[in-house]
Amino acid sequence: MLQDTQHRFNMHCALYDANRCRSCQWLEKSYPQQIDDKQSLLQQLLANHPVAEWRAPVLSAQQAFRNKAKMVVSGSVERPVLGLLHADGEAVDLTDCPLYPASFRTVFAALIPFIARAGLTPYHVARRRGELKFVLLTESTRGELMLRFVLRSEQKLTQLQAALPWLQAELPQLKVITANIQPVPMAILEGKEEIFLTAQHALAEQLNDVPLSIRPQSFFQTNAPVAAQLYQTAREWVRALPVESMWDLFCGVGGFGLHCATPQMRLTGIEISAEAIACAQQSAQAMGLHQVNFAALDSTQFATGNDSAPQLVLVNPPRRGIGETLCQWLSEMAPPWILYSSCNARSMADDIARLPDYVVQRVQLFDMFPHTAHYEVLTLLERKS
Image 1 (tube, rainbow, N blue to C red):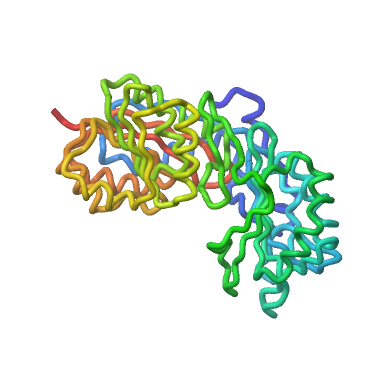
Image 2: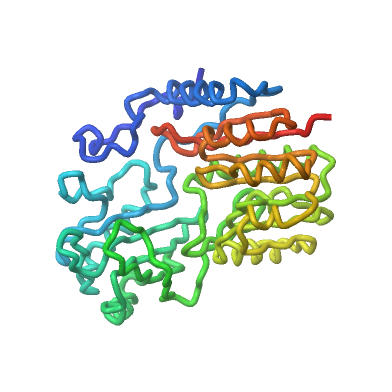
């Protein structure tokens, strides 16, 4: 049972009560019940795989934990609404969402008049008119911000650039500002083209003692305090093993590998996103790690193209898991250890079932997403003797 008072109170949300936003599906459950339910579901999924050690779940703050906001822009240029579109088509203002830190409200308050100043007409989905589709906001743990305007075209780009000095004066914590061009009339968050409107192209971040970089189209966890504990736990587990060589597959900006690496360890990080790999390379250089190599490649193709494996393979795949092909390769190459970080325990359990020559040594749940059924889980697998 959870004793800490911050973990016992129930977060209140007026939007949920009014049935305008139901993103937090589990909000009516107490936080202890949420954790118990997640742990029970995880144990059920791994029921066919004996676990040598279950670690206690890592908890989250219940509110103000998100470092990222993805806001649909609707309404009019004079009175824009930042939030989402309800099922009935009505715009829902999410600027007071309790999942966001208080610092976001200052940004949203400045963005409302700025949109009018820049003449950025909100995009109307049904009419397929307007220019501004989304605003995407990311905050680092040091309070610096990256702001991205998702536009239908470059038509308003000159107006946006001309109006920016006012916004930058209002919000000096803005370090990276971009325009993302997304011309497709579909519910796609961002396009491929990113136009930088500031000299700085990456948001500086640090989790634990590891410097990280966040670029516009690179994935980064939305709950930094829990992510820091996840990375630190991976480091402790790996460093307790006699490991001198390691792969970090689906590595993102390199959070796992950079935490686990030592000056002596040979580390290879693989990620399909070139933006994320550029961040990882920058971090490795800042840390003075010379036996580290990051490459923008498909993780499964990279692995299966090799005829040997390192001592430890760390995988942090998207929700679909690592899949049959990579599991088969791991079974054949037989690395002594696999460290599996998952945002979908169901696909992870399916993958573990495809690895019959491995035993589950340790499992720990990380509550990255309070008030929902989602969570992260870290699992250490060891090859049977």
